[in-house]
Length: 428
Image 1 (cartoon, one colour):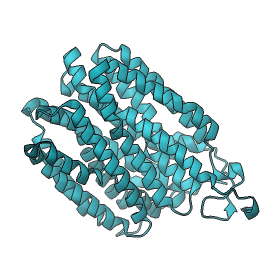
Image 2: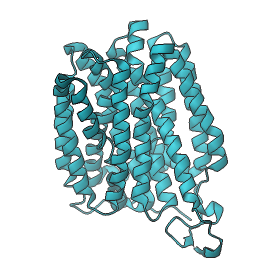
Image 3: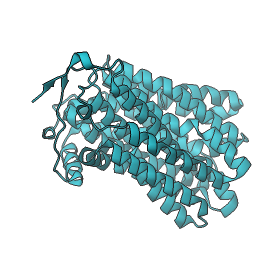
Image 4: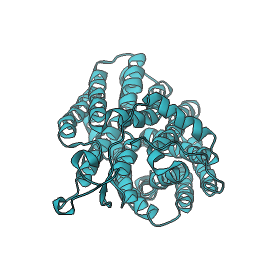
């Protein structure tokens, strides 16, 4: 039974915006932690003699778990609450990254950066942004989701120049310790400010006038997540969205996020300068993905996805040739590509909500995002293999560009047939 909110007691700033700000910081730092190995590939090669293919195994496992943990993370958050789950995830990340400063063997790299950091970062991935946006916002949800998604992608890129400079000047182990300290510092902030749902404070969602009671959940989180997957596998829209997001992951985190710095070094561009290109992409992504959220509130999400994937494909096909124009060609690529880095998330979440119900959008997006990270893991590993075997990333970049053009076509077919039966609503 809904309770009418006391409009006279409403604070000037809805607490939903404070929740969004805290989530923004968590996603920013969490994504930065996950992306840190991209600046450590060359130092590890130099100190330990590991090949790009060997390091790619650990990074691929990290990316894979980052995605596969997502749907289970949504179900766990539904069961135990945002504050406890986020604090636990940040603690895992801090301990895992600090321990990597002591590693000396490839299996330790795979265990720590791959399994421990991958699992922790999966709890503070894009599914967290989708959960917060759905729980706290009835209006401007697309805009908020765009901002939160941008923070996740920007965190992977903006910190890289600083971390690359730190690795060059102080050694790669200092990078691990600084990242661990930054993650640990977030825990008190989350514990103090984060709340699970608006009803915990007696508030309605932003844009509503009634307080929705907090659901009482008894279902096992793993069973709920698997039930969502079972229903999704019977849906044509799920396969289309998961397929396009597989290509999205392969063409962003997996390939460019992991291998652009080594590719620049292959062409004589310094590591810190190359990391600066990723930072430029991050700044452009903050603009592009936030704008994507605004557009998602107003335009057909299928058409937006088609444009995003098509433009990304063209930019990736241009990338191998941009090295011929030195840093200026790469700067042009960074701006154009960065605006489209992960602008696909807001329209994808909206389409998931239309297919499976708004109350299940975050859970189903978790499985779709898992496909994203499978694609990213595949590209991280295959990119390293192609570089090891051929001595160049040319084939990897061109292949990713062509796949994006295929994704643009796939996006136009989403929603053309009736969706699969939705999950049952969460019990109140």
